[in-house]
Image 1 (spheres, rainbow, N blue to C red):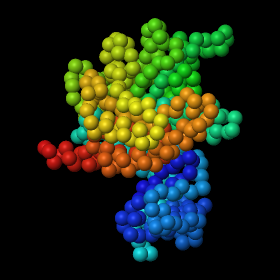
Image 2 (cartoon, rainbow, N blue to C red; image 1 turned 90 degrees about the vertical axis):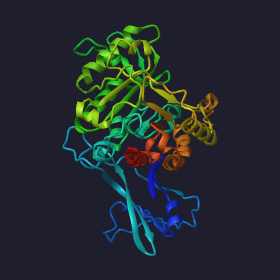
Image 3 (cartoon, helix red, strand yellow; image 1 turned 180 degrees about the horizontal axis):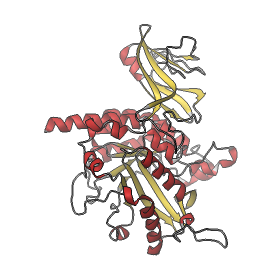
Image 4 (cartoon, rainbow, N blue to C red; image 1 turned 60 degrees about the vertical axis):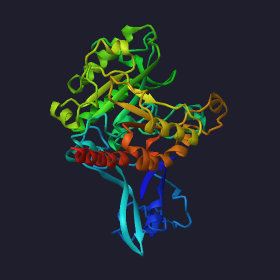
Length: 424
């Protein structure tokens, strides 16, 4: 039994109920209940006064998937992680939604919607020996393309611009460790752009979705810095992958951006081992050195000027418009030849999302990126859990709460560690 959030709704996949032959009951204190073995509750089942609102048997849902009409919304993050300046607790922490598997009237197992803010260091004994190029790392596509609050009918165009519904702090707290960032530079207007204390034009840099600016870059940088200060064992990868606006033929603008990054993260930046092929440093090596931020940069000429920049990271992107086409493409890329990957950078990313046609955007034929992501995400969890985990490094998705790839990544890395130790 696994769980996830899609369309802002809570859903539970019930395929394990079928294998176990039990009853799935899902509930919440607000009330959900699936009958057949799972239960999603706002609080654990010890409270007998809680009455789940929805019951479904696995026979009723043979496809193993059911989406309720109960919204998760934006609940406070548990464990002290809801604020960026408070005392935080390590380990996983449950939100107010639980899923319980029942078999023959008895609770068989329980899971919850949860955050994994310190999952890397929590698993240090199991996965510390693994190099970063062999880890399965959960990430987000166009990580900075989000909006605080929900979309309205007036936001129709933004339905094809926004790829996430949580800010970067919340993404990292949930367990995301790879951030895909596209930066645009916008010249100042009279009296419209202030300089920071060092004279860098920090407010001129934005996170873009292609040529449209979405979020000030300063907001993303602050979230990353705050998280690294709060979660002192976690490793984060920032991939400045493209520069769609304002950088063409302007190397000084790259240098201005890099001056800002270096000033903000100097004490945390992990330098690459240039000229050494392989899978990169192990997590133990990274923890020993104390540098936990990897910055990949999508301009190889600029990379050569800075010893602390990692070379461009290969993104396996299929430009697919159907789930079937995307999965066929990913199957070939993940399990097939690795010739397209950059030998200078041990990291590479699977971009597991659909791409709309231009006509989809103008006529809203696909319903928006969230609807497209929902059709992909609910199937991704099983594909990576059962088939693709062993060969995957980074996997980036749209609206990441619609899948369970953070949990799959944790479990896959434990399996990878067991395989590595067996081979020793």
